[in-house]
Image (cartoon, rainbow over all chains, first blue to last red; front, side):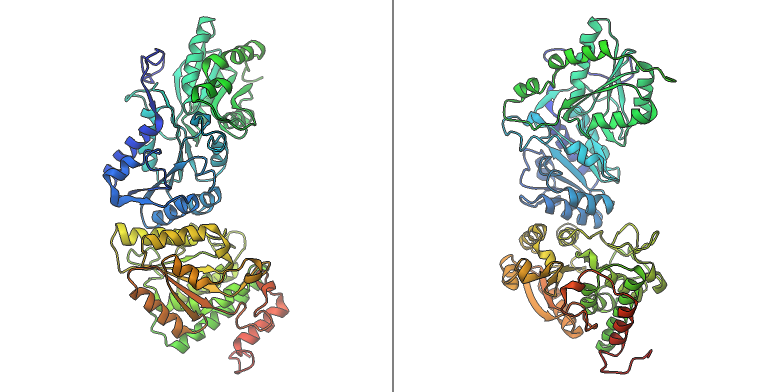
Length: 332
Length: 286
Protein backbone atom coordinates (compact mmCIF):
# COMPACT_ATOMS: atom_id res chain seq x y z
CA UNK A 1 0.00 0.00 0.00
CA UNK A 2 1.01 3.60 -0.45
CA UNK A 3 -0.49 6.74 0.99
CA UNK A 4 -1.67 7.84 -2.46
CA UNK A 5 -5.46 8.03 -2.25
CA UNK A 6 -6.48 5.94 -5.26
CA UNK A 7 -10.10 5.91 -6.29
CA UNK A 8 -11.27 2.66 -4.62
CA UNK A 9 -13.50 1.93 -7.62
CA UNK A 10 -10.81 2.48 -10.22
CA UNK A 11 -10.88 -1.11 -11.46
CA UNK A 12 -14.63 -1.49 -11.65
CA UNK A 13 -16.48 -1.40 -14.95
CA UNK A 14 -18.48 1.64 -13.91
CA UNK A 15 -15.54 3.75 -12.78
CA UNK A 16 -16.29 7.43 -13.28
CA UNK A 17 -15.10 8.67 -16.66
CA UNK A 18 -14.37 12.29 -17.47
CA UNK A 19 -12.10 14.07 -19.96
CA UNK A 20 -9.15 15.71 -18.26
CA UNK A 21 -9.80 18.87 -20.27
CA UNK A 22 -12.97 19.25 -18.20
CA UNK A 23 -10.82 19.25 -15.09
CA UNK A 24 -8.66 21.90 -16.71
CA UNK A 25 -11.73 24.09 -17.25
CA UNK A 26 -12.68 23.81 -13.59
CA UNK A 27 -9.13 24.44 -12.47
CA UNK A 28 -8.72 27.56 -14.56
CA UNK A 29 -12.00 28.96 -13.27
CA UNK A 30 -10.88 28.38 -9.68
CA UNK A 31 -7.45 29.85 -10.36
CA UNK A 32 -9.06 32.87 -11.99
CA UNK A 33 -11.27 33.44 -8.99
CA UNK A 34 -8.24 33.41 -6.71
CA UNK A 35 -5.92 35.52 -8.84
CA UNK A 36 -7.05 38.53 -10.87
CA UNK A 37 -3.84 38.51 -12.91
CA UNK A 38 -4.87 35.36 -14.72
CA UNK A 39 -6.04 35.93 -18.28
CA UNK A 40 -7.04 33.47 -20.97
CA UNK A 41 -6.40 33.52 -24.71
CA UNK A 42 -7.79 31.18 -27.31
CA UNK A 43 -7.34 30.54 -31.04
CA UNK A 44 -10.91 29.80 -32.14
CA UNK A 45 -11.31 26.62 -30.08
CA UNK A 46 -12.88 28.06 -26.98
CA UNK A 47 -15.47 25.41 -26.21
CA UNK A 48 -13.54 22.28 -27.08
CA UNK A 49 -10.52 23.35 -25.04
CA UNK A 50 -12.90 24.13 -22.14
CA UNK A 51 -11.39 27.59 -21.75
CA UNK A 52 -14.97 28.75 -22.33
CA UNK A 53 -15.63 28.10 -18.64
CA UNK A 54 -13.23 30.92 -17.79
CA UNK A 55 -14.52 33.14 -20.60
CA UNK A 56 -18.09 32.90 -19.37
CA UNK A 57 -17.10 33.99 -15.86
CA UNK A 58 -14.44 36.57 -16.77
CA UNK A 59 -15.20 37.91 -20.28
CA UNK A 60 -13.07 41.00 -19.65
CA UNK A 61 -10.04 38.80 -19.01
CA UNK A 62 -10.56 36.61 -22.09
CA UNK A 63 -8.97 37.35 -25.47
CA UNK A 64 -9.95 35.74 -28.75
CA UNK A 65 -7.02 35.83 -31.20
CA UNK A 66 -8.56 33.88 -34.07
CA UNK A 67 -6.88 31.02 -35.89
CA UNK A 68 -3.38 32.34 -35.31
CA UNK A 69 -1.31 30.20 -32.98
CA UNK A 70 1.90 32.16 -33.46
CA UNK A 71 0.06 35.28 -32.38
CA UNK A 72 -1.64 33.38 -29.55
CA UNK A 73 1.58 32.74 -27.68
CA UNK A 74 3.41 35.94 -28.58
CA UNK A 75 0.52 38.17 -27.52
CA UNK A 76 0.49 36.11 -24.32
CA UNK A 77 4.20 36.75 -23.87
CA UNK A 78 3.47 40.48 -24.06
CA UNK A 79 0.60 40.22 -21.62
CA UNK A 80 2.94 38.47 -19.21
CA UNK A 81 5.31 41.43 -19.60
CA UNK A 82 2.40 43.61 -18.53
CA UNK A 83 2.05 41.56 -15.33
CA UNK A 84 -0.55 39.01 -16.37
CA UNK A 85 -0.50 35.22 -16.07
CA UNK A 86 -1.77 34.12 -19.48
CA UNK A 87 -3.27 30.72 -20.26
CA UNK A 88 -3.28 30.01 -24.00
CA UNK A 89 -5.45 27.24 -25.36
CA UNK A 90 -5.57 25.42 -28.66
CA UNK A 91 -5.14 21.88 -29.88
CA UNK A 92 -1.70 20.58 -29.10
CA UNK A 93 -1.21 19.83 -32.79
CA UNK A 94 -1.23 23.59 -33.40
CA UNK A 95 0.11 24.92 -30.12
CA UNK A 96 2.90 23.89 -29.55
CA UNK A 97 2.80 22.04 -32.87
CA UNK A 98 2.94 25.13 -35.05
CA UNK A 99 4.40 27.86 -32.84
CA UNK A 100 7.36 26.15 -31.21
CA UNK A 101 9.92 28.81 -32.09
CA UNK A 102 7.76 31.58 -30.66
CA UNK A 103 7.38 29.54 -27.47
CA UNK A 104 11.12 28.96 -27.35
CA UNK A 105 12.17 32.59 -27.89
CA UNK A 106 9.43 34.77 -26.46
CA UNK A 107 8.35 32.55 -23.56
CA UNK A 108 11.18 30.22 -22.54
CA UNK A 109 14.28 32.28 -23.30
CA UNK A 110 12.30 35.37 -22.31
CA UNK A 111 11.26 33.49 -19.13
CA UNK A 112 7.65 34.62 -19.04
CA UNK A 113 4.99 32.67 -17.10
CA UNK A 114 2.82 31.83 -20.10
CA UNK A 115 0.83 28.59 -19.90
CA UNK A 116 0.50 26.51 -23.05
CA UNK A 117 -2.64 24.38 -22.86
CA UNK A 118 -2.40 21.64 -25.49
CA UNK A 119 -5.80 19.99 -25.86
CA UNK A 120 -6.73 16.95 -27.93
CA UNK A 121 -3.25 15.44 -27.74
CA UNK A 122 -2.60 11.84 -28.70
CA UNK A 123 -4.31 9.32 -30.96
CA UNK A 124 -7.45 9.41 -28.82
CA UNK A 125 -8.63 12.41 -30.83
CA UNK A 126 -9.97 9.65 -33.05
CA UNK A 127 -11.66 10.22 -36.42
CA UNK A 128 -9.91 13.53 -37.15
CA UNK A 129 -6.87 11.48 -38.07
CA UNK A 130 -3.12 11.89 -37.99
CA UNK A 131 -2.99 15.63 -38.67
CA UNK A 132 -4.70 16.34 -35.37
CA UNK A 133 -3.27 13.45 -33.33
CA UNK A 134 -0.08 15.05 -32.13
CA UNK A 135 2.33 12.52 -30.66
CA UNK A 136 5.48 14.65 -30.64
CA UNK A 137 4.49 17.41 -28.22
CA UNK A 138 6.15 15.90 -25.16
CA UNK A 139 9.44 15.58 -27.03
CA UNK A 140 9.46 19.13 -28.37
CA UNK A 141 8.42 20.73 -25.09
CA UNK A 142 10.63 18.83 -22.70
CA UNK A 143 13.81 19.98 -24.45
CA UNK A 144 13.09 23.65 -23.79
CA UNK A 145 14.98 25.27 -20.89
CA UNK A 146 12.67 26.92 -18.30
CA UNK A 147 9.64 24.96 -19.52
CA UNK A 148 7.57 22.87 -17.11
CA UNK A 149 5.78 19.91 -18.75
CA UNK A 150 2.74 18.31 -17.13
CA UNK A 151 0.53 15.47 -18.42
CA UNK A 152 -2.31 14.94 -15.94
CA UNK A 153 -3.59 11.43 -15.42
CA UNK A 154 -7.27 12.27 -15.10
CA UNK A 155 -9.72 15.13 -14.70
CA UNK A 156 -9.22 15.59 -10.97
CA UNK A 157 -5.48 15.80 -11.38
CA UNK A 158 -5.85 18.14 -14.36
CA UNK A 159 -7.78 20.53 -12.13
CA UNK A 160 -5.04 20.44 -9.50
CA UNK A 161 -2.29 20.74 -12.10
CA UNK A 162 -3.97 23.76 -13.66
CA UNK A 163 -4.19 25.52 -10.32
CA UNK A 164 -0.56 24.64 -9.60
CA UNK A 165 0.87 25.95 -12.87
CA UNK A 166 -1.20 29.11 -12.45
CA UNK A 167 0.98 30.00 -9.50
CA UNK A 168 4.37 28.50 -10.40
CA UNK A 169 5.74 31.62 -12.10
CA UNK A 170 7.20 29.59 -14.97
CA UNK A 171 6.53 28.82 -18.62
CA UNK A 172 4.42 25.68 -18.48
CA UNK A 173 2.88 23.15 -20.84
CA UNK A 174 -0.14 21.09 -19.86
CA UNK A 175 -1.12 18.17 -22.10
CA UNK A 176 -4.81 17.29 -22.30
CA UNK A 177 -6.91 14.69 -24.08
CA UNK A 178 -10.25 14.94 -25.82
CA UNK A 179 -11.81 11.68 -24.67
CA UNK A 180 -13.26 10.71 -21.35
CA UNK A 181 -10.87 8.55 -19.36
CA UNK A 182 -11.25 6.74 -16.03
CA UNK A 183 -10.74 8.85 -12.93
CA UNK A 184 -8.23 6.96 -10.79
CA UNK A 185 -7.30 9.72 -8.36
CA UNK A 186 -9.47 11.41 -5.77
CA UNK A 187 -9.79 14.84 -4.24
CA UNK A 188 -7.45 13.60 -1.52
CA UNK A 189 -4.69 12.42 -3.84
CA UNK A 190 -1.59 14.59 -3.71
CA UNK A 191 -0.41 16.69 -6.62
CA UNK A 192 2.66 18.86 -6.71
CA UNK A 193 4.60 20.01 -9.74
CA UNK A 194 7.79 17.98 -9.95
CA UNK A 195 6.48 15.02 -7.93
CA UNK A 196 5.92 11.45 -9.06
CA UNK A 197 3.66 9.13 -7.09
CA UNK A 198 3.81 5.45 -6.28
CA UNK A 199 0.23 4.29 -6.78
CA UNK A 200 0.91 0.66 -5.99
CA UNK A 201 3.98 -0.93 -4.47
CA UNK A 202 5.78 -3.93 -5.92
CA UNK A 203 9.19 -5.53 -6.21
CA UNK A 204 9.34 -7.22 -9.60
CA UNK A 205 9.05 -4.36 -12.07
CA UNK A 206 8.28 -0.64 -12.14
CA UNK A 207 5.46 0.38 -14.47
CA UNK A 208 5.84 4.11 -15.05
CA UNK A 209 3.17 6.10 -16.82
CA UNK A 210 2.39 9.67 -17.69
CA UNK A 211 -0.94 11.21 -18.58
CA UNK A 212 -3.92 8.94 -18.94
CA UNK A 213 -1.74 5.89 -19.71
CA UNK A 214 -1.06 5.42 -15.99
CA UNK A 215 -4.57 4.00 -15.69
CA UNK A 216 -3.72 1.19 -18.11
CA UNK A 217 -0.66 0.38 -16.02
CA UNK A 218 -2.84 0.05 -12.92
CA UNK A 219 -4.92 -2.52 -14.77
CA UNK A 220 -1.80 -4.32 -16.00
CA UNK A 221 -0.48 -4.51 -12.43
CA UNK A 222 -3.65 -6.30 -11.38
CA UNK A 223 -3.31 -8.77 -14.25
CA UNK A 224 0.31 -9.44 -13.31
CA UNK A 225 -0.67 -10.02 -9.69
CA UNK A 226 -2.80 -12.95 -10.85
CA UNK A 227 0.42 -14.49 -12.14
CA UNK A 228 2.31 -13.81 -8.93
CA UNK A 229 4.20 -10.84 -10.33
CA UNK A 230 4.32 -7.83 -8.02
CA UNK A 231 4.45 -4.71 -10.14
CA UNK A 232 5.02 -1.25 -8.78
CA UNK A 233 3.04 1.50 -10.51
CA UNK A 234 4.58 4.97 -10.60
CA UNK A 235 2.54 7.88 -11.93
CA UNK A 236 4.67 10.68 -13.36
CA UNK A 237 2.40 13.61 -14.22
CA UNK A 238 5.30 16.07 -14.27
CA UNK A 239 7.61 15.09 -17.11
CA UNK A 240 9.82 18.13 -16.51
CA UNK A 241 11.21 18.71 -13.96
CA UNK A 242 11.41 14.98 -13.32
CA UNK A 243 11.09 13.60 -9.80
CA UNK A 244 14.36 11.68 -10.09
CA UNK A 245 14.30 10.57 -6.47
CA UNK A 246 10.99 8.72 -6.70
CA UNK A 247 11.93 7.12 -10.03
CA UNK A 248 15.33 5.94 -8.77
CA UNK A 249 13.94 4.67 -5.46
CA UNK A 250 11.41 2.57 -7.33
CA UNK A 251 13.98 1.12 -9.73
CA UNK A 252 16.34 0.43 -6.83
CA UNK A 253 13.68 -2.01 -5.60
CA UNK A 254 12.49 -3.48 -8.88
CA UNK A 255 15.52 -3.35 -11.18
CA UNK A 256 13.57 -2.97 -14.43
CA UNK A 257 11.09 -0.56 -15.95
CA UNK A 258 8.33 -0.32 -18.49
CA UNK A 259 7.18 3.16 -19.47
CA UNK A 260 3.89 4.05 -21.13
CA UNK A 261 2.71 7.16 -22.92
CA UNK A 262 0.20 8.06 -25.61
CA UNK A 263 2.97 9.65 -27.66
CA UNK A 264 6.04 8.92 -29.74
CA UNK A 265 8.49 7.02 -27.61
CA UNK A 266 11.30 8.90 -29.39
CA UNK A 267 12.24 11.80 -27.17
CA UNK A 268 9.13 11.44 -25.06
CA UNK A 269 8.40 10.32 -21.51
CA UNK A 270 10.06 6.94 -21.92
CA UNK A 271 13.17 8.68 -23.16
CA UNK A 272 13.15 10.87 -20.07
CA UNK A 273 13.23 7.80 -17.84
CA UNK A 274 15.77 5.97 -20.00
CA UNK A 275 18.09 8.98 -20.02
CA UNK A 276 18.01 9.22 -16.24
CA UNK A 277 18.54 5.52 -15.67
CA UNK A 278 21.34 5.17 -18.22
CA UNK A 279 23.34 7.72 -16.25
CA UNK A 280 22.42 6.87 -12.67
CA UNK A 281 21.09 3.31 -12.47
CA UNK A 282 21.36 1.42 -15.75
CA UNK A 283 18.39 -0.87 -15.36
CA UNK A 284 16.66 -2.33 -18.43
CA UNK A 285 13.86 -0.13 -19.83
CA UNK A 286 11.09 -0.96 -22.26
CA UNK A 287 9.30 2.05 -23.67
CA UNK A 288 5.69 1.56 -24.75
CA UNK A 289 3.83 4.13 -26.80
CA UNK A 290 3.78 4.94 -30.49
CA UNK A 291 6.74 3.69 -32.50
CA UNK A 292 7.88 6.16 -35.16
CA UNK A 293 4.65 6.36 -37.07
CA UNK A 294 1.68 8.70 -37.40
CA UNK A 295 -1.83 8.04 -36.21
CA UNK A 296 -4.87 7.50 -38.41
CA UNK A 297 -8.63 7.87 -38.40
CA UNK A 298 -10.81 5.58 -36.34
CA UNK A 299 -12.82 5.61 -33.18
CA UNK A 300 -10.75 6.34 -30.06
CA UNK A 301 -11.46 2.85 -28.71
CA UNK A 302 -10.47 1.18 -31.98
CA UNK A 303 -7.29 3.22 -32.19
CA UNK A 304 -6.30 2.45 -28.61
CA UNK A 305 -6.44 -1.25 -29.49
CA UNK A 306 -4.82 -0.79 -32.90
CA UNK A 307 -1.87 1.08 -31.38
CA UNK A 308 -1.66 -1.29 -28.40
CA UNK A 309 -2.29 1.35 -25.78
CA UNK A 310 -4.70 -0.60 -23.60
CA UNK A 311 -3.95 -3.01 -20.77
CA UNK A 312 -5.36 -5.95 -22.74
CA UNK A 313 -3.25 -5.20 -25.81
CA UNK A 314 -0.09 -4.40 -23.82
CA UNK A 315 -0.06 -7.31 -21.38
CA UNK A 316 1.65 -9.86 -23.67
CA UNK A 317 4.56 -7.52 -24.35
CA UNK A 318 4.80 -6.67 -20.67
CA UNK A 319 4.94 -10.34 -19.65
CA UNK A 320 7.44 -11.15 -22.37
CA UNK A 321 9.72 -8.39 -21.10
CA UNK A 322 9.47 -9.62 -17.51
CA UNK A 323 10.21 -13.20 -18.54
CA UNK A 324 13.19 -12.38 -20.72
CA UNK A 325 14.90 -9.44 -19.03
CA UNK A 326 16.58 -9.87 -15.64
CA UNK A 327 16.36 -7.35 -12.84
CA UNK A 328 19.25 -4.95 -12.52
CA UNK A 329 21.05 -5.06 -9.17
CA UNK A 330 22.77 -1.89 -7.93
CA UNK A 331 26.52 -2.40 -7.94
CA UNK A 332 26.25 -4.52 -11.07
CA UNK B 1 12.59 60.45 -21.07
CA UNK B 2 12.31 64.15 -21.67
CA UNK B 3 15.95 65.24 -21.61
CA UNK B 4 14.94 68.73 -22.76
CA UNK B 5 17.10 68.46 -25.82
CA UNK B 6 16.61 70.63 -28.88
CA UNK B 7 16.10 69.09 -32.27
CA UNK B 8 19.71 69.78 -33.22
CA UNK B 9 20.91 68.30 -29.95
CA UNK B 10 18.87 65.16 -30.61
CA UNK B 11 20.30 64.99 -34.10
CA UNK B 12 23.78 65.29 -32.62
CA UNK B 13 22.99 62.51 -30.14
CA UNK B 14 21.92 60.31 -33.03
CA UNK B 15 25.33 60.79 -34.59
CA UNK B 16 27.06 59.98 -31.30
CA UNK B 17 24.97 56.80 -31.28
CA UNK B 18 26.21 56.05 -34.81
CA UNK B 19 29.79 56.38 -33.65
CA UNK B 20 29.09 54.01 -30.78
CA UNK B 21 27.51 51.49 -33.16
CA UNK B 22 30.65 51.45 -35.32
CA UNK B 23 32.89 51.11 -32.25
CA UNK B 24 30.76 48.30 -30.85
CA UNK B 25 30.71 46.37 -34.10
CA UNK B 26 34.46 46.78 -34.54
CA UNK B 27 35.09 45.50 -31.00
CA UNK B 28 32.64 42.64 -31.47
CA UNK B 29 34.01 41.64 -34.85
CA UNK B 30 30.53 40.72 -36.03
CA UNK B 31 26.98 42.05 -36.01
CA UNK B 32 24.74 44.14 -38.21
CA UNK B 33 25.64 47.60 -39.44
CA UNK B 34 23.13 49.00 -41.91
CA UNK B 35 19.90 48.73 -39.92
CA UNK B 36 21.19 50.19 -36.65
CA UNK B 37 22.82 53.16 -38.43
CA UNK B 38 19.58 53.87 -40.28
CA UNK B 39 17.47 53.71 -37.13
CA UNK B 40 19.61 56.08 -35.05
CA UNK B 41 17.26 59.08 -35.15
CA UNK B 42 14.14 57.01 -34.45
CA UNK B 43 15.49 55.18 -31.41
CA UNK B 44 17.35 58.21 -30.08
CA UNK B 45 14.29 60.44 -30.31
CA UNK B 46 12.05 57.82 -28.70
CA UNK B 47 14.32 57.27 -25.71
CA UNK B 48 15.67 60.79 -25.13
CA UNK B 49 12.59 62.79 -26.00
CA UNK B 50 9.31 60.93 -26.44
CA UNK B 51 9.01 57.96 -24.10
CA UNK B 52 7.99 58.31 -20.50
CA UNK B 53 10.76 56.26 -18.88
CA UNK B 54 13.20 56.39 -15.98
CA UNK B 55 16.56 54.85 -16.91
CA UNK B 56 17.55 54.46 -13.26
CA UNK B 57 14.24 52.68 -12.56
CA UNK B 58 13.81 50.35 -15.54
CA UNK B 59 10.80 48.62 -13.95
CA UNK B 60 9.02 51.91 -13.13
CA UNK B 61 5.33 51.06 -13.08
CA UNK B 62 4.19 54.06 -15.10
CA UNK B 63 6.70 53.67 -17.91
CA UNK B 64 6.08 53.48 -21.62
CA UNK B 65 7.32 50.33 -23.33
CA UNK B 66 9.77 49.89 -26.17
CA UNK B 67 9.84 46.66 -28.18
CA UNK B 68 12.55 46.03 -30.73
CA UNK B 69 11.01 43.50 -33.08
CA UNK B 70 13.98 43.23 -35.45
CA UNK B 71 16.37 42.12 -32.74
CA UNK B 72 19.44 42.01 -34.99
CA UNK B 73 19.50 45.82 -34.96
CA UNK B 74 20.09 45.78 -31.19
CA UNK B 75 23.38 47.78 -31.29
CA UNK B 76 21.33 50.94 -31.85
CA UNK B 77 19.13 50.21 -28.81
CA UNK B 78 22.12 49.40 -26.60
CA UNK B 79 23.89 52.57 -27.69
CA UNK B 80 20.83 54.71 -27.02
CA UNK B 81 20.14 53.03 -23.68
CA UNK B 82 23.70 53.79 -22.59
CA UNK B 83 23.25 57.37 -23.75
CA UNK B 84 20.04 57.58 -21.73
CA UNK B 85 21.78 56.26 -18.61
CA UNK B 86 20.50 52.69 -18.30
CA UNK B 87 24.08 51.42 -17.99
CA UNK B 88 27.65 52.78 -18.38
CA UNK B 89 28.80 53.49 -21.91
CA UNK B 90 31.98 51.48 -21.31
CA UNK B 91 29.83 48.36 -21.28
CA UNK B 92 28.96 48.88 -24.95
CA UNK B 93 32.27 47.37 -25.98
CA UNK B 94 31.29 44.04 -24.38
CA UNK B 95 28.70 43.48 -27.13
CA UNK B 96 28.59 39.83 -28.25
CA UNK B 97 31.33 38.78 -25.82
CA UNK B 98 31.18 35.91 -23.36
CA UNK B 99 29.52 36.92 -20.11
CA UNK B 100 28.19 40.22 -21.45
CA UNK B 101 24.73 41.52 -20.65
CA UNK B 102 24.75 42.81 -24.22
CA UNK B 103 23.91 39.62 -26.10
CA UNK B 104 24.17 39.51 -29.88
CA UNK B 105 20.40 39.56 -29.99
CA UNK B 106 18.55 41.16 -27.08
CA UNK B 107 17.65 39.05 -24.05
CA UNK B 108 15.31 40.61 -21.55
CA UNK B 109 16.49 38.51 -18.65
CA UNK B 110 20.08 39.65 -19.13
CA UNK B 111 19.75 43.44 -19.19
CA UNK B 112 17.33 45.56 -17.12
CA UNK B 113 15.43 47.91 -19.38
CA UNK B 114 14.86 45.46 -22.21
CA UNK B 115 11.18 44.57 -22.50
CA UNK B 116 11.54 41.51 -24.73
CA UNK B 117 13.80 38.88 -26.18
CA UNK B 118 13.97 39.01 -29.94
CA UNK B 119 15.94 37.97 -32.95
CA UNK B 120 13.80 35.44 -34.80
CA UNK B 121 11.77 37.92 -36.80
CA UNK B 122 8.09 38.72 -36.72
CA UNK B 123 7.23 38.23 -33.05
CA UNK B 124 7.97 41.59 -31.42
CA UNK B 125 4.85 43.24 -32.77
CA UNK B 126 2.61 40.59 -31.21
CA UNK B 127 4.33 40.93 -27.86
CA UNK B 128 3.89 44.69 -27.96
CA UNK B 129 0.25 44.17 -28.91
CA UNK B 130 -0.15 41.95 -25.85
CA UNK B 131 1.11 44.73 -23.60
CA UNK B 132 -1.06 47.29 -25.39
CA UNK B 133 -4.12 45.06 -25.01
CA UNK B 134 -3.50 44.67 -21.27
CA UNK B 135 -3.00 48.41 -20.79
CA UNK B 136 -6.03 49.42 -22.82
CA UNK B 137 -8.64 46.74 -22.24
CA UNK B 138 -7.79 45.18 -18.87
CA UNK B 139 -5.87 47.66 -16.72
CA UNK B 140 -7.40 50.77 -18.33
CA UNK B 141 -4.15 52.72 -18.22
CA UNK B 142 -4.82 54.90 -21.21
CA UNK B 143 -1.87 57.24 -20.63
CA UNK B 144 0.84 54.66 -21.27
CA UNK B 145 2.14 53.86 -24.74
CA UNK B 146 3.86 50.95 -26.39
CA UNK B 147 6.43 51.81 -29.05
CA UNK B 148 7.75 49.27 -31.50
CA UNK B 149 10.36 49.22 -34.22
CA UNK B 150 10.12 46.56 -36.90
CA UNK B 151 12.23 46.05 -39.94
CA UNK B 152 10.68 46.05 -43.39
CA UNK B 153 12.10 42.70 -44.48
CA UNK B 154 10.62 41.37 -41.25
CA UNK B 155 7.17 42.05 -42.68
CA UNK B 156 7.60 38.89 -44.79
CA UNK B 157 6.76 36.96 -41.60
CA UNK B 158 3.20 35.68 -41.19
CA UNK B 159 3.27 36.38 -37.47
CA UNK B 160 3.38 40.11 -38.30
CA UNK B 161 0.08 39.97 -40.15
CA UNK B 162 -1.55 37.94 -37.40
CA UNK B 163 -0.59 40.79 -35.08
CA UNK B 164 -1.79 43.35 -37.60
CA UNK B 165 -5.26 41.78 -37.62
CA UNK B 166 -5.27 41.47 -33.85
CA UNK B 167 -4.30 45.09 -33.14
CA UNK B 168 -6.75 46.31 -35.76
CA UNK B 169 -9.62 44.31 -34.32
CA UNK B 170 -9.02 45.51 -30.78
CA UNK B 171 -8.23 49.11 -31.86
CA UNK B 172 -5.02 49.15 -29.84
CA UNK B 173 -4.53 52.90 -30.03
CA UNK B 174 -1.72 52.90 -27.48
CA UNK B 175 0.38 50.92 -29.92
CA UNK B 176 2.73 53.00 -32.06
CA UNK B 177 4.85 51.09 -34.55
CA UNK B 178 7.75 52.35 -36.64
CA UNK B 179 8.59 50.38 -39.75
CA UNK B 180 12.23 50.94 -40.60
CA UNK B 181 11.61 51.18 -44.34
CA UNK B 182 15.17 50.92 -45.60
CA UNK B 183 14.30 48.66 -48.54
CA UNK B 184 16.98 46.04 -47.85
CA UNK B 185 17.13 42.55 -46.45
CA UNK B 186 19.82 39.88 -46.50
CA UNK B 187 19.25 38.55 -50.02
CA UNK B 188 18.73 41.90 -51.68
CA UNK B 189 16.26 44.74 -51.99
CA UNK B 190 12.90 44.11 -50.37
CA UNK B 191 10.93 44.58 -53.56
CA UNK B 192 13.07 41.93 -55.27
CA UNK B 193 13.08 39.40 -52.45
CA UNK B 194 9.38 39.65 -51.57
CA UNK B 195 7.53 42.82 -52.54
CA UNK B 196 5.87 44.76 -49.72
CA UNK B 197 4.16 47.50 -51.66
CA UNK B 198 1.63 48.95 -51.45
CA UNK B 199 2.72 48.98 -47.86
CA UNK B 200 0.67 51.91 -46.59
CA UNK B 201 -2.49 50.54 -48.21
CA UNK B 202 -1.89 47.15 -46.64
CA UNK B 203 -1.79 48.57 -43.13
CA UNK B 204 -4.74 50.87 -43.77
CA UNK B 205 -6.78 47.91 -44.89
CA UNK B 206 -5.94 46.12 -41.63
CA UNK B 207 -7.45 49.01 -39.67
CA UNK B 208 -4.35 50.99 -38.81
CA UNK B 209 -3.67 54.73 -38.90
CA UNK B 210 -0.76 55.15 -41.30
CA UNK B 211 1.79 57.92 -41.63
CA UNK B 212 4.89 58.11 -43.81
CA UNK B 213 7.88 60.16 -42.74
CA UNK B 214 11.54 60.84 -43.34
CA UNK B 215 13.02 58.59 -40.66
CA UNK B 216 16.11 60.74 -40.31
CA UNK B 217 14.18 63.92 -39.52
CA UNK B 218 13.84 64.32 -35.75
CA UNK B 219 10.96 66.78 -36.01
CA UNK B 220 9.07 64.39 -38.29
CA UNK B 221 9.54 61.62 -35.74
CA UNK B 222 8.26 63.88 -32.95
CA UNK B 223 5.27 65.05 -34.98
CA UNK B 224 4.32 61.56 -36.12
CA UNK B 225 4.35 60.15 -32.59
CA UNK B 226 2.26 63.11 -31.40
CA UNK B 227 -0.26 62.32 -34.10
CA UNK B 228 -0.20 58.63 -33.21
CA UNK B 229 -1.00 59.41 -29.58
CA UNK B 230 -3.84 61.65 -30.70
CA UNK B 231 -5.48 58.85 -32.70
CA UNK B 232 -7.62 57.08 -30.13
CA UNK B 233 -9.48 54.52 -32.22
CA UNK B 234 -6.72 52.77 -34.17
CA UNK B 235 -3.21 51.47 -33.75
CA UNK B 236 -0.59 53.53 -35.54
CA UNK B 237 1.98 52.66 -38.15
CA UNK B 238 4.69 55.13 -38.99
CA UNK B 239 6.47 54.08 -42.16
CA UNK B 240 9.84 55.69 -41.59
CA UNK B 241 11.82 55.92 -44.80
CA UNK B 242 15.46 55.51 -43.92
CA UNK B 243 18.78 55.02 -45.63
CA UNK B 244 20.45 51.78 -44.60
CA UNK B 245 23.94 52.51 -43.29
CA UNK B 246 23.06 56.21 -42.92
CA UNK B 247 26.07 58.38 -42.14
CA UNK B 248 28.66 56.04 -43.64
CA UNK B 249 28.67 56.61 -47.40
CA UNK B 250 30.27 53.30 -48.35
CA UNK B 251 27.55 51.45 -46.42
CA UNK B 252 24.56 53.51 -47.50
CA UNK B 253 21.95 51.83 -49.71
CA UNK B 254 24.01 48.63 -49.96
CA UNK B 255 22.16 45.52 -48.82
CA UNK B 256 25.48 43.72 -48.41
CA UNK B 257 25.96 45.77 -45.22
CA UNK B 258 22.79 44.34 -43.68
CA UNK B 259 24.90 41.81 -41.84
CA UNK B 260 28.57 42.24 -41.11
CA UNK B 261 30.85 44.46 -39.10
CA UNK B 262 33.49 46.86 -40.38
CA UNK B 263 37.19 46.01 -40.11
CA UNK B 264 39.45 48.52 -38.41
CA UNK B 265 40.22 50.47 -41.59
CA UNK B 266 36.55 50.61 -42.51
CA UNK B 267 35.62 51.61 -38.96
CA UNK B 268 38.16 54.44 -39.00
CA UNK B 269 36.76 55.71 -42.28
CA UNK B 270 33.20 55.29 -41.00
CA UNK B 271 33.89 57.27 -37.85
CA UNK B 272 35.54 60.03 -39.90
CA UNK B 273 32.53 60.21 -42.17
CA UNK B 274 30.07 60.32 -39.27
CA UNK B 275 32.06 62.94 -37.35
CA UNK B 276 32.45 65.22 -40.34
CA UNK B 277 29.01 64.53 -41.77
CA UNK B 278 30.77 63.20 -44.85
CA UNK B 279 33.20 66.13 -45.06
CA UNK B 280 30.59 68.86 -44.64
CA UNK B 281 31.94 69.93 -41.23
CA UNK B 282 35.21 69.67 -39.35
CA UNK B 283 35.12 66.72 -37.00
CA UNK B 284 35.35 67.51 -33.31
CA UNK B 285 37.89 64.81 -32.71
CA UNK B 286 39.93 65.12 -35.87
